[in-house]
Image (cartoon, rainbow, N blue to C red; front, side):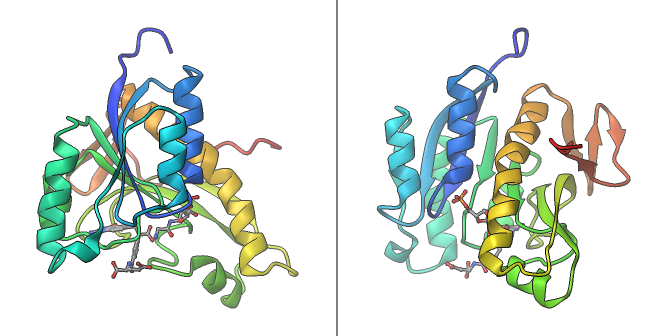
Length: 220
Ligand code: NHR
Ligand code: GAR
């Protein structure tokens, strides 16, 4: 990773923070050229905040319940984020819908990880819905965040099989393992300057993607 300048990263979470942990670990080992400037949770006291503290990263709480509405919460959130001068902001299990003002402010430097093979299963409870739909393949996607919920252009996906005896928990665990490699890969590309949002398209090395990239399968 020599030769690539570190980018400043702000991570937004709402809970457990296992994706955050994967990123903290790769940043600490030098694999990922990022400086994690801050971790911010809209839910107080969650496990992800403790993970940040353990790694020596500022762990901040901004409880949305202390604000009268989304616009007020979001202006405070923007102010808090921008104090840390991020090059990139990522949602890692962040569970609040964001308004167009927020997504517009960070356009082209805001990523989300979503636990489905978008455009399938936008929104919540994706594992349950994939099983109910009889899918034989499921996975996770990294996308640029736009105003349209889980509708921004997809950068890269990881696939897993769905087995006949899966329940939402077994399937979620299989997807999560892949998520922990997927987010670092996308962040790495962004840090290297290989990813751009151009209108509604992703440019990878300057070329528009006509379909999402695929994370290599470790077993394949
Ligand atoms: N906001 C915009 N504008 N665009 C996206 O693509 C977004 C976003 C905000 C969050 C993450 C997303 C996911 O990956 C995300 C993508 C929360 C909800 C939700 O319904 C839906 C999708 C996502 C995150 N949240 C409820 C709400 O009223 C609260 C649910 C809860 O607190 O448990 O905000 O799936
Ligand atoms: C992850 O599976 C992520 O894809 C999903 O929540 C989990 C967070 O886990 N995100 C969403 O569902 C967004 N609505 P983590 O806190 O351990 O990283």
